[in-house]
Length: 382
Figure 1 (cartoon, helix red, strand yellow):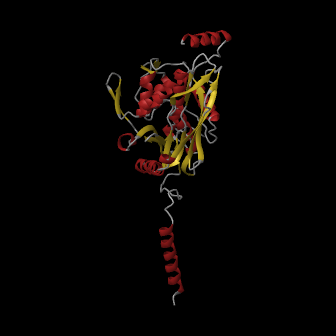
Figure 2 (figure 1 turned 120 degrees about the vertical axis):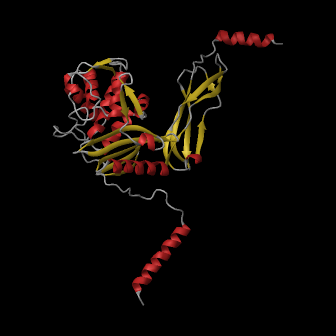
Figure 3 (figure 1 turned 90 degrees about the vertical axis):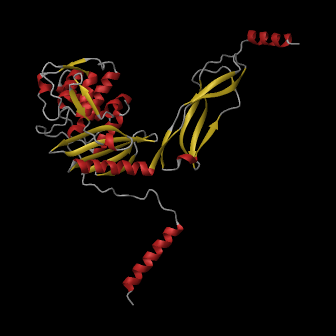
C-alpha cells in the first residue's frame, strides 16, 4: 500500500470536511503579490493598518515628498499666514529646479491656488520650491519646518533634504511607507486638497499651459481621489494612492516599484483588498432629542450628540445597535453643554463607539416669584 498517497487523500478529505462544516474565514491573512520593496494600506479616519509589507524601511520617496510640502502649505493657509489669492513670485533658485516642472520663469507670478494645482497635478518641482519660499522665506527654512512637522507626526523613519524629492544631490532624503501614510492622512484632513488631487486635466497661464495628472488612477479607478506619485531612478516608482467608496477613505502607499504599471497595479490590489474586506460604520449626528425639565423656566431642553465611526469587517455595519442612556427628566438649572446622557453603538454586544448627549441651551431654575406667578395663573384658569 502506498501510504504517501493515502496520507494525501486523507488530508484532502479532512480539508473538504472542514470547508463544509465551517464558514469561510473572511479575514484570513492574504499576501498581495508585488515587486515593490515596501507597501502599506490604511483606513484614513481610524488610521488602522489593513495590510503592510516592509512598511518601516527608510527609502527615497521621489515626488511623494511633496505631500509634506502641500501639508505645510495647507496649514499655513489655515493659520492665515498665506492665502490662496496671494501672488507668488518665482525666484531664480525656484526656476532652476529641473525635473518635472511647469517652466516658471524668474520673476513670473502665479497665485498660491495656481501653484498648488501645478504641484499636485503636474508634480512641478519649480512650483513646489516657489511655494516653500513664499511660506517660509527660504528653502532651508521650509525644509526645517518639514522635518519638524515629521517629528510632530512621529514619522520616525523620515528625513527631508528638499521640498520636491529630487535625489541627485541628496545624501539621506528618505521616508517609509508608514510615514507616507501618516502624512497623507494628515493632508486629507484638508478637504480643499481633494479639489486639486481629483483634477485629471486642467490649465494655467490663462489656458496657455496644459496640466495632466501624473496619477492615472484618478481617471481609471472607481473612487480614486488622490494623492501623489513619484519617480526617480534612485527611488523607483512610488505612489500614495487614495480612494473613497461608501464613506470609507483608504490610503495605499507603494514604494520602490520597478515600473509605473506595476506600481499602479499594486496600488489597485491594495485598494481592492481594503474595499472587499472592510467597511466604515459612521453614525449620524442627532439634534432632535429633548427632555422635560422639572422646576425650569422652560419645560423642555433640546439635546444633541455627535457621530462616531468604526472600522468593521465587510457586512457587519447592518448589525450595529444603538443603546441610549438618558434620565426620564432633568432638574433645573440645566447649562448649555451639560452632559445629560450617553449613546453607545454596539456590535454583537461589544461597544464600538459612543458619544455624550449634551444640552444645547440653558434652562434656569424657576425663582420664588416665577413659582408664585405660575401658581396664580393656574388658579386663574378656574
